[in-house]
Image (cartoon, rainbow, N blue to C red; front, side):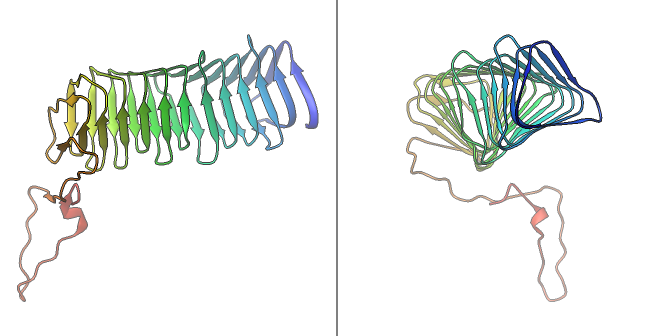
Length: 278
């Protein structure tokens, strides 16, 4: 529908194989179950109001604004290219995508939960002011600057290729991966009972006092500014106390690679013969 308004006070079903196209205002006061394709146009607004429930079992594509003040359960694929404000409860059992150019907001009092098997894929600046828990997979790409001013509980796979500013509490009992380009700046509490894996171009900055311990494998950079980090594994990692310091390049060759000299005395090495770069 275009330019109009629909208010759901009871139950609404979009059945499988059907496309529901919202070009106006959709307000849900009841229960909305999507088993087909739900398209939210750029000019459209979808409001899931307090006490209401939106269940996405299939495909939800939004180029408009979304405000969730009730409960949203995403079992399928939800992709938003505009604005998603989560004032209520957002449970991710399927795939939630917020690419570059969109906005995603979780203010104080809200709940963001990535459930087992769920994937949260963000490539935007993001401020977490509510309760953020992960039992599935969180993928934060290069454009992400995640500012955490509340709590993050990671029990799954948490992959960071952008930046995370931890100003409150990050409790890791799963796997925290700082990929190449990933930068975790700890200004408060980082508790690790799982594993932290820092790649060759990953960075962990310990601004807070105290010690970050547990299983920590580092091939990257660790800056001990206000406290310390206990490393348990890794071949190429380095520690510094000054943010201007960098480690020299180190090439690590794969074991079991054999090359024979050509008749002219030369030999060629492919990129795949070198492990971890230089």
